[in-house]
Length: 108
Image 1 (spheres, rainbow, N blue to C red):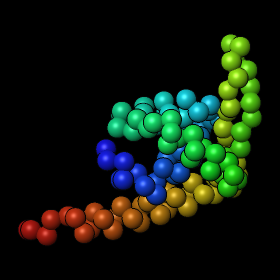
Image 2 (cartoon, rainbow, N blue to C red; image 1 turned 30 degrees about the horizontal axis):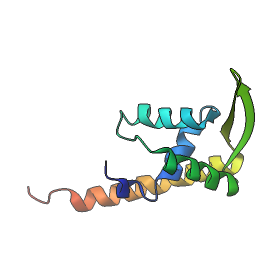
Image 3 (cartoon, rainbow, N blue to C red; image 1 turned 90 degrees about the vertical axis):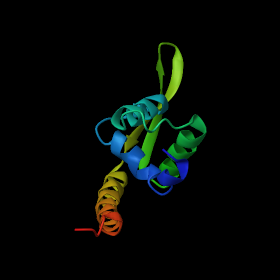
Image 4 (cartoon, one colour; image 1 turned 90 degrees about the horizontal axis):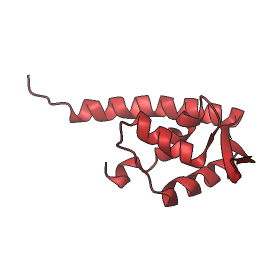
């Protein structure tokens, strides 16, 4: 998938994978790959800045933990993030319906 296709949608995708449970950064990346059937394999240089941006905006919270002697940051969706995800889904449905209507063949 072309990276420019994701522009403007990455935040919603990250929020969606955090909806079910808190995840550390690498697990967020794995969830995106799994749920997209392998189409979304983001570089860490894309994912981690997005997670930090979402945290600064109040959509996700995080906490440090130590697992197997290694420190890792676990991210969770906040109430504000849940509302943002609902808005993202509504906007996506409207946008995808619009694009589908335009791109659909007009031939009988």
